[in-house]
Structure formats: structure tokens, C-alpha cells
Length: 481
Image (tube, one colour):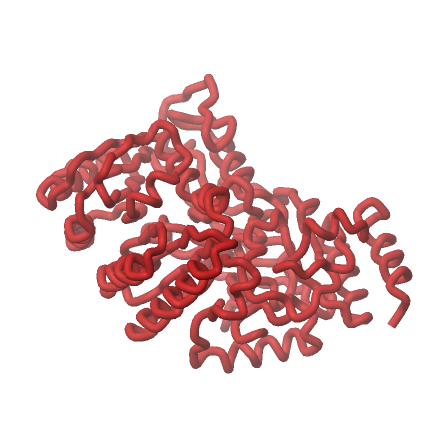
């Protein structure tokens, strides 16, 4: 192995002197669970990533890829960290083909920029948008052949997350109820394997592979199989009308009865969320109403043609009243988008208010959702913990956070015990619980990826075949992969 300074010089020749950093103040900003890297590099394209990884593989240097670092708290602490490869300079939209409803982008492009570009690519009423929140002055009447389009995912940290991190973390969001998972939107990838080889899979057409679709391996792999550098997605035309119904309920039984009633119909909302009062009041959006002491809020997103949205709104409001709704409001177009952004940024607001924030994602059979939420409430209430939850009803996902003080050891102990109780509860119904963020000192006491399932054998074999040296994100993924 070369002297470390020689290695850094070689990396600097690849990415440029100003984009290979070893200064302590820079390295501290790229620590992973308090483990600092030895160097950080900022490649500008896929070829530079390949050259960097070839050097790292030859010198047996471990790599953690990152973009804007919104997902860096996920996973176990790394067993070793030599090099961080940051994709922030890889921020180009390579091919925007709205005629064929596809887009190809580099990993460092921010999600908000993709959506803003796609929305303004074609015009309709309420468009073009200057950004995700603000309408431009120009308004053009609706023309079904000249719609804008969008990437149909709804990730957390939508304002700051890069598309590479979203893919790595499989961050689809609540609108997967209508638009399905991010795996269903990805058509192809170019990624750099741990050997430095550039691998391409898939393409711009829907039926572009025979056999197993290797591009899907990148989704949710947390950078453990390589660095995804470019990706192609299929797009969806912007709906003619968009709005969110916010409906408050005094009890969870009323809120859940309403939600079940919606799913018993043939209506197709984009998402149906149920959140407790603590989650709702931490949303950073001035124009949403204060529902006072009402304990639960249902947020139902409606997206589609005007007639369909109008019908869904009317029928859903009737169902809400029949199930004990206390009050409601309708957020249309711009406010609908603002609400979606506020939900995606909820974790940021919670982190500002709780130094020991613990975030978890519970998954379970959809039919078990009411029982799981009741377990969340009972477990956290019995432990006297302050908590939030947001249920993606119809998707089998519940996001919950514990708002605890990092310096309060006794409360942190109760939080760990409560999370372990909920993990056991999810396993009872063949679900699981993943810790999406927690103080580093607690991670060794938590099962970050929940219980390992029977599919771990396959995952381990894939990892051993693709990354036999174990240099990519070592120890951070499921089962210490």
C-alpha cells in the first residue's frame, strides 16, 4: 500500500486539487456516526468516480458515498471509514425527454430541481412554476397535450435530498399509494462497482431487460453494492387538479374508521395519512389551520382530472362527517405542494427540538395498521415518552419519532426499551422496524435494521460476489454487510 499522502495526490490528479480534501474542518463535516474519514473527494462525473474507486480498491480503502448527507444518519456505524465520495458536483440533468416521459440525471441532482424543471418543461393552468412553491406570472390555459410532468415519488427532505441518496435509501413517500414505489419508476442506472468497473443496466424504455432487472438492486442498497452515478426514470404527467383534504378527529378510533371507509370505496386518492397532534403541530407551514385539542389529523391527497378530484372531495368529506370529523380544510394547488414539502421536512423540525431524536419506520401487513398504531401509542405512553407518528395508510408504513433529550440517560433507556418492544410487536405480524436515525451512542443497543429475515442469505451472497473486499459502506447495511 502506498503512503497515504501519495494516495491523496493520486486522487487529486483525478478530481482536481481543490476537490480532494484532507483538512480536519472539512472531514468533520463528513463524519458518519462520529467516525471521520481520512479524505473526501468530489468527482464531477461517472468516469472520475470509476477512477477514484479503482484507486480505493487497489489500496484497500473503504468508501462511503454521499450526496447532500440527508440520509447519512441511517444504518449502523461503519466498521472502517477511509474515503467519502461526495456526488454534489454530479448535478446535471443529462436527458430531459418529456415527449417520451423519461428523464436521465446524475446522482447529485437535487430532487427539488428535478421537479421544478419538469413542471416548467411544458405549460398548463397554474404553470409554469418558478420553483416548487411559487407560481410564475404567466398563466396558460389547460391543454391536455401540453401538460407538465413530474417524478412520482414523495421523499423525505425533498428540498435538500439528492436523487442518488433517495434511490439508495428507497425513500418513496406517502404518495406511493397511487404512484407505487420508486422501484417502479426507475428504468435504468449506470453505477460504479467496487472494482471501479462502470456497469449499465436498463434504458429509456419500460421493457428494456430480459431476466432479472439489475437496476433495481441499486434501490435501497444504501451504497453497499457500488456508487449509483446516473439513473433514468419514467415520468407521469402533472395532474389537472391537486389538493389535500385536512380533516381533524377527536379520537384514533374515529380517524381509523374514516380511513378504512375510504379504502372500502373505489376512490383512488394519491395518499391517505393519519398523524397525531404532536406531528401535525411540528409541520412548518403557516397557512394550515390549528385544529386545537383534536388529537388526530387525516391528510388525504387528491390528484387527477378535475371531475375525479371534485367527486373524491365530495364523497370523502361526507365519509369524514359520518365518522365523527371535528373540522376540515381544503389545500389547493400551491398550498397542496407546500403541505407535501412541510411533511417531507418534518424530521428537520423535530431534530431542532429534540437533541436525542430517534426515528423509526415500522412496516407490517396493511390489515394490521390499526393494531400497530395502537401499540405505538400504548408503548410510548406507558413509557412516558413524547412522540410523533405519521401513518401511510394503505401502504403498511408508520413513521414514528421519539422527542427525547440526549443528556437524559434515564429517558434514553426507556426509549430504547420502547423501540425494542415495538420491534417485537411488528415481528408478531410478520413486519419489521427500521431505525432511520438515532444518537450514535444508542445504536449499539438498537437493532438498526430490525430482525434479519430469510432473504439475508441471498443479500449476503450478492454482496460477496459484487464486493468481495468489503470496501463499500462496510458494516452499515443489514446484518453488518
